[in-house]
Structure formats: C-alpha cells, structure tokens
View 1: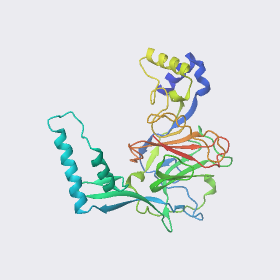
View 2: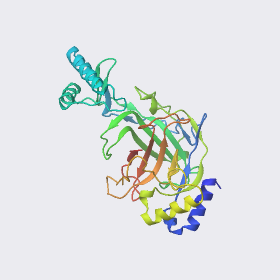
View 3: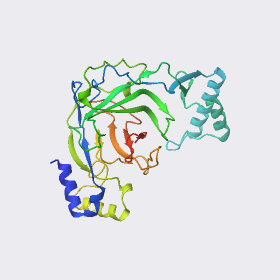
View 4: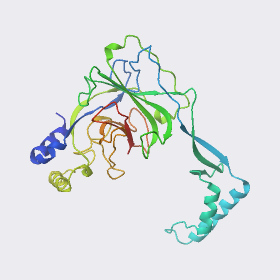
Length: 325
C-alpha cells in the first residue's frame, strides 16, 4: 500500500461522506526504457495490425506565418517604444504606459497577428492549413488491461492505444478553448494482432509532441476530487482533517494525484471547474487519462501542463473531450 493510499484511507475513515467521491486510478510512472510492442508504455512501438491503415490527420493545422514589417512601421514601433521608456525614466517601479493613440497605431501595425519578432521585425500569426494526403499520427501511449484495471474496458478488448497528430490544432470539433495535438483512441484485443505494422516517420512535427520511449511502473491508488467538485461544507471538513495532520487537501497531496494517470480525478488548478459535457449526448464526461509534461517522456503540452482525455460514461464510443491545464 502506498503512503498516499494510507493517508487517503485514513481520511475516508474519518470523513465517510467523502467515500462516494473516491475513484480508483492507476499512476503510470513512466521511466526511460526500451518497451516491447506488447508492453504497456509511453512512446514505444504499438501492437498495430499490419493490415490496418495507419491513421493520418488532414487538419487543418495551425501553421506559423511570418510577415516582414515595412521600414516605416518598424521605425514607428521603435519611436513608440522610446516614448514609453522616456515616460518611465526616473520611476523604476512604474509600468510602461501606452497612450490611446499609440495603442491604436500598434494595433494597426500588428493587424491581428499574435506576436512580433523584435529581432527580425516580423509579425507572427497562426493560420489554419489543411494537410494532404495527411500527417501520420504519433504513438503516445499503450496500456494493457492487466496493468490498468482501474478504467472501463469495452467488451472483448484488453489494449488501449493513444495516438495524436504532432501539430498544433485549434477549433477541433467538439472541443472548446483547446489548443494542442488532436488525439485519437483505439481499443483492441492484443491476441488479435498476429502481424505488426511499422509506423511511418513523423512529418514536420512539433518536437515537444514526440514522446521519448518509456516503460511503465503502474501502481493503483485511490484518488479524491478537486475542491470545486464537492460541497463547500465537505471540503472544509477535509481541509481541517488535512491541516490537523500537517498536510493539505489539494492537488497532489490528498486529491487529484499529479503525473501520468489512468482514471481518477482531474484538477482545475489553472481555471475554475470546467464541466466537460459529451458532444453527442450531453452527459458529464469522466477523466480517462492524464498525460503530463516533462520528466522522462519529455513531452510539453500547453504551458508545461497536463493534457487530459475525458470520455462519455454513458457510451464510450461517443467523441472524446480534451482539456489542458
């Protein structure tokens, strides 16, 4: 039994009103290694049938476009920058300030672009571009049911494969406020794969979306929800219990265990609670997977955050929901 489970079990014993909120989860704990195709792993070779086409993404993908500023606009921007510095002179703790007129001029120069490269003096904007014949998806995660019994498995399957398009996307169907890789799930029976396909090489991929191969060291835990998911009175009791024992009821301590995880609860540490409803039936979705930035897989999603995959509890064949925190 892990130390985390010991603490959570003690909390549930003393505050039994939390028991209905407890969920089973598997911490995947990836470590750099050389996984085999039949293993549970991150970034390794998938057990993919040779007679099944490798999936591709046709986008649209967000592509960076650069536009050179005219000499006149560059000089105007520099003049505004000097004016701001002059106004701040002698006030080291003061903020740089723009006049309304200067802000209007800068907005005109930017022309809707998201950033300005002050070394090359280029506007940078992201534009959606389709990819034909398509970008091969990248293998991110493979899980065997025997290693991860804490999530639901469709009848007749014991293998979950997670792939994503290693390019930027926004405005994906069924997703809101999402910017990142487009994710696909595959369930299959491992013993049905008799000949294995070799995946195509990534094409023009975002480097931070290419995981390093890792083996897993899974361990089962009991996970508790974010404070926004439970009544205020119950949260107060849980926090008081934790404080009396020199810990806290927050992400990574007693609730919302961090890192690569199957099942359990998501944290809402960057936003308030964002209920993610199934786009097909409107049911509240449930956390299936958490894929984290950094460590041995060396991925980076969002601002070094977690990419979470949610599925419909009423029908797992319904479209998934994606969220990055």
